[in-house]
Amino acid sequence: MVIACARLRTRDCFSGLTGLHLTDVQWEQAARDLAHAGLGLRSVARDAPAAYLASVGGCAQACRELDPGYAASGLASDPTVLLAASSFSALLAQPLASHLALGMRQKALTALCDAASWSQHLLVSSVTARALLRSEAEQGARAWLAAVPVAKTRMEGAAFVMELRRRLGVPDAPGDAWYPKCDGIMDRFALHAGTCAAGGERTQRHNALRDLLASWADRAGLQPEVEKAGLLLPQRPGEAQLSRPADIFLPSLSGAPAALDLAVTAPQRQESLAQAGQHALASASQYAETKRAYLQTAHACASQGVRFVPLVVESTGAWEPAASKTLQLLSRAVAARTGADAGILHAELLQEVSVLLRSHHARAALRRRAEASAQDGAA
Image (cartoon, rainbow, N blue to C red; front, side):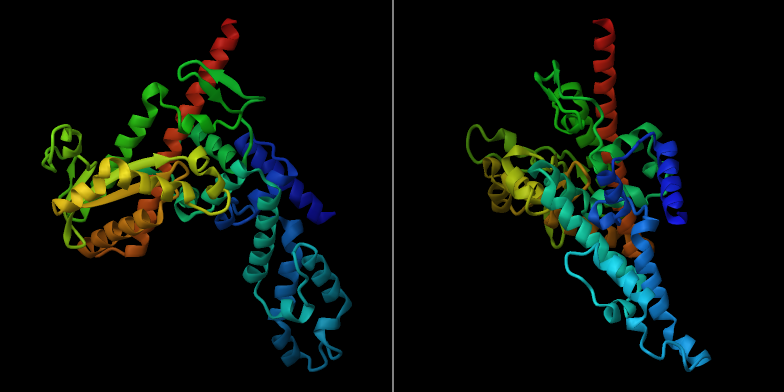
């Protein structure tokens, strides 16, 4: 009764703060840790067996020192322990023996629950939902949830709630609708807002991301140049468009001039959806290859002594692996120059980028919903 009451109070509190009333499936996701696309809102009912087993097992030695006769017949065979172990194993794909559970910390036991819930969620989800879940679980995609809401990491309340909807798969409308400005479908989950070319939001998002990363490169002393013109000399007629392949040009990165080319793509991108449903970052990785191959840009840069570096991020904030390494170089360079901790700086960089991308998506989605409501009212 107490556990059930605590569970209801937690859900009521969340709903009161966000206005979101989650289904059981969505609440189970919210109860997982951030690395499994959750919110870290732990469930008292689900985590109680793990907490009990870890507590009993962790203090068993101290109890025996106080009372040599404590659990003389064996703690693993104690009826209460067996009941807790049975309840815990019911949450897993494979049962865990009581003596093994008693030797584990609560964090490790809870991680097993999260992994089992994650696997089951992926199993019953559509390919689009799987692609989104895998992207949401990435480090960059969850950074906004760990950010202190101040300055560059502050989000408006409405934008924050909109992004909670996207992360948990909570619909923002009763159904899909036609969006006249791009002649496309505005889906009920508001994913369309992150890919729609109408309204100018994509360009604004791109430029804001470019300026943010350029500011970090400047802090690192890398002398960035934004939209550097004439970087490459055309080798034949018609190649003038290749003269500016860099959103950010760095005179030297890892020992060579570097042209950083930014792009934001969607995890549900149709060209890579099947792969994204199976592997995290498939959309970003495939789009990075597209950037390299387009007009042979990577080859053209290399032939003139410039390293072409695609920096592709998914709209959730999940970075393509090679791009993620470049961000680490930036944060380490800032740390070396300022004496700050590289790990803390890298977390701050990911948080700033994540909040920027999430805020731009949320504002685009909210604007489209407001337009749709106005049209419905006029009709």
